[in-house]
Amino acid sequence: MNFGFTEEQSMVRKMVRDFVDKEIMPYISEWDAKGHSEPRILERLAELDLMGVCIPEEYGGSGMDYNTLAIVCEELERGDTAFRTAVSVHTGLNSMTLLQWGNEEQKQKYLVPQAKGEKLAAFGLTEPNAGSDVAALQTTAVKDGDHYILNGSKTWISLCDTADHFLVFAYTDKSKNHHGISCFIVERDMPGFSSKAIKGKLGIRAGNTGEIFFDSIRVPKENLLGKEGEGFKIAMAALDNGRFTVAAGACGTTMACLEASIKYCEERKTFGKEIGKHQLVQQMIAKMEAGLEMSRLLVFRAGWLKNQGKRNTRETSLAKWQACDFANDAANDAVQIHGAYGYSNEYPVERYLRNSKAPVIYEGTREIHTIMQAEYVLGYRQDKPLRNTLPAWPFEEALNKI
Image (tube, rainbow, N blue to C red; front, side, top):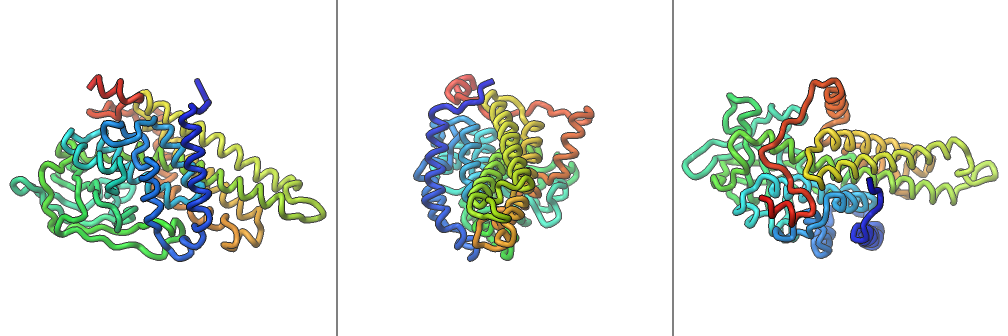
């Protein structure tokens, strides 16, 4: 076991931290208050080669390992959850799924420009009546010659108004239950596509989230990802990658809460001494530190398994569940430490608290992950080998074996 960062990983962490400090921190309070999604941030991430961090260089990415993606997500969420979410969806849910399941033509057409940051990508699984219960989705895709006719809608889709490409899951054979779900690559400019942002969110207000609609969209058969009926497996594999990035981002929220609380402990005095001298405040600070370190260990273990090319559904589920809970608890304690000021946007901790709630819900609620972990321990759940796997890292060695 090696718990140290490589020189490259340390450089990436510093680069992203400096970027967050200079280009996000001074403006995020205003963006959040206005519900403004700043497009320049994603453009800058592309300029820094951070939109395809763990995509092989031959497909337009930076070719770094999966734990470097975790580092990027942690540092971005230290600035705000909205920007980590964008990378999670674009890279974790979409691009890594194309890397794992796409054929060479699909990779060249869609993955390469996404990894370069020239095109923005999103993921369409959730529906108004289909969240944790994926098999309840209503979107359909009917074969018609060389096309599929796609009808339906998706909701709570990040980058709904800005993404160029979407991975969309739909039933091609409803009689087969979840074995009848397939996955399609949908382009925004395909006739019949539309989107609408959701307003009034509790948190992640600086991110674009909403609904996408499919009105008899003709999707070429070449845009079927994987095989017909393989969509459920593809979706679950994609969530392994998305959950990994969510867990890494949660570490960033906990880190931000800790930094803000330490700063306030040094500024605020009560009963003749800094509030950091009070033991009950120290208890909350200690919980944040413990949560941060435990979360990182879980995240980097999952990333290590990804680097080895090994299945990591169980480990990633545990990391996502625990890291998001730790972050939510840290944000709650950070508000408490700040007292009445924590209830005001004069300090950032109220935003951390609002933002920390969504990750406890999306990409598998804490209740879903609790059940998953219990079923693993009891022997009721076992992960079967997938037809396609993510390439191990270093990518050159893995791709040469294919």
